[in-house]
Length: 556
Image 1: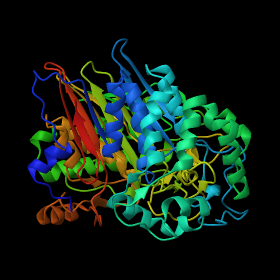
Image 2: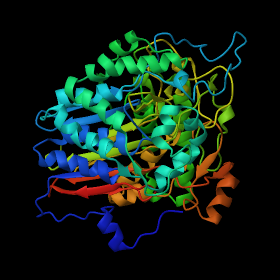
Image 3: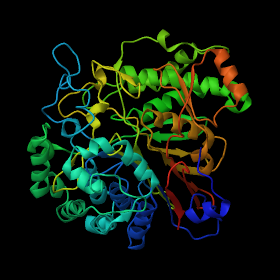
């Protein structure tokens, strides 16, 4: 169940911020941790802009939420600069090492050699993109020196911060893996055991790595002493990294994908993310229906059927567009959506087995992080960052404090089921230097009166969460509505509708089963959406942080 709060508590925590039009406010920030939100405002108070604040929030989340992101991971930053109306997508997704190949985790018979090799330890780690992304954002969009914007993160790493229950729950989930690696155990455990609640987590080596990044820019991570320590640790543990991998890593600026849903401009993530295409494809399918005039059961049914078809195309066609040809124009066209819509019935499902195409097992870790920032001029950032599974690979490179990702598991494999049930195709198979497909979906929504910034962690369920929030935005609701909305999800395979307990009534469950849907309640609520909105006519701001998490949304 969701955490229970009184209205006073919610206001104190900043989950709800109602803004009067005449209040002289500048910026709204919603992030997954109060210290990260505070870091953003600290930098704004020093004369930084929204993009400097985004550097500070990103770096601070890498310190205070190590279960979800970090310097050893990657991410996406969807940015809009108001003075020249520039909207860009900064792709800082991790890349496969140059020594990687499609059969790196399987033997000649196509059988998995070690089921944990793509999940735990140095063998699971792709080349990190987050440090390069921070440098790029600061140099191309920020006003302040990188050293200033990184100062809050460095301080929290060196001095420590108090860990909460969310951190401890995820630490327990990965405790066995963290115990395998001395550098990881020393940082995150206490004498090999879980720390107590409210314990102080200090990361002195990470503070020094951040200091090197602040001093030397990208060379402070991808070269010099930090790179030497990373390579030594990874290679000694059997990983594939080389100095060339680190030297060659670059972020890529891309054009976002843009579409329209019933008068709402939707701007979202292009490949190497599947998020924007799947989101817009589902919205285009649904655009022919006036959902507001339909009964709730029919709405749920149609939304689920749109999810099924859009996720099916994710499995068949999507991958790193630098390596494969993604038929983006076709997937987002009205004619294509009409064709998909023609197979949708109001009174029955089309089983996923009747959709065409050969797919392979795929997986995607569910623990990520997101933050949203917007100011009264309309400058904004939606950023989703990840190291894949909670605490990534569990492997800290000795002497760096850097917890490495396990993003290699986000590629498809020829063999073996996975814990998330996603499927894919050759478009997302491992290749040297390739970015693995992601579902991260940082998104902007804009209509005649509002501009919204939103996104969430959640693995394969990210896209469906943003879809439901977009449909809620269309009803002129507030950010708090978007982030608290009960959620349901269908990803083509497995052919199951996952749902939070609050999503459907007993009568609706019976009726959905009658239409042919297979239903599965989630054990816990999922997602941790962060959202902010600018009201164009009044220049008022509003922001909300998902009460499923421990984040903070504030307007100042």
